[in-house]
Amino acid sequence: MSIAQLSAAPREDVAHVFPLPHAARAVPTVRRRAERVVAHWNLPPEVAEDVLLVVSELLTNAVVHALPPAALRLTRVRVRGRAAVRVEVTDLGPVTPAAASAPDASIDPDEHGRGLCIVRALADRYGVEVHPGGTCRWAELALE
Image (cartoon, rainbow, N blue to C red; front, side, top):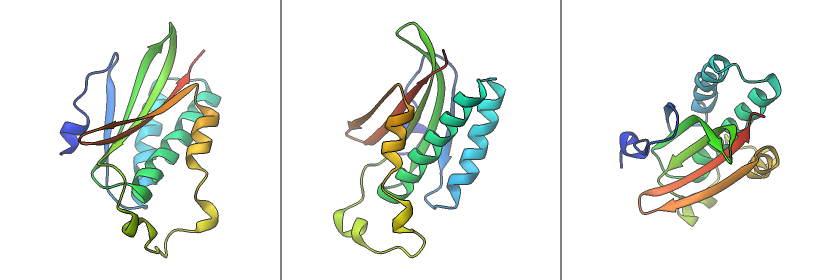
């Protein structure tokens, strides 16, 4: 499955889609691109910070725990009549248990394992959609 296929589903509003290279060093680069979109949307500062933290956590989760390729999608949506930002990271699904247990010197175990808890704490709604071509982890943050 290609990045184009991962990002082909239509949304209510204009979506901004960013491919994620499968390397930890790519997360800050993609986050900066997302930051430009969020700044253009003129979100309240506290919401913008939360959106970017959710972006970072979902991107890191994809790099550490999933198979490439992955893509980030940012969309302004209406959820139950309220304006929100939807953050989605789609990848090809989890790595095999053997690959997941292989040590990676670049990953500090004291700094991992809390990302999805952070996402749940910040998001008004969140979830995981598993489909034949992979997995989409998403979160929606209300603007109002």
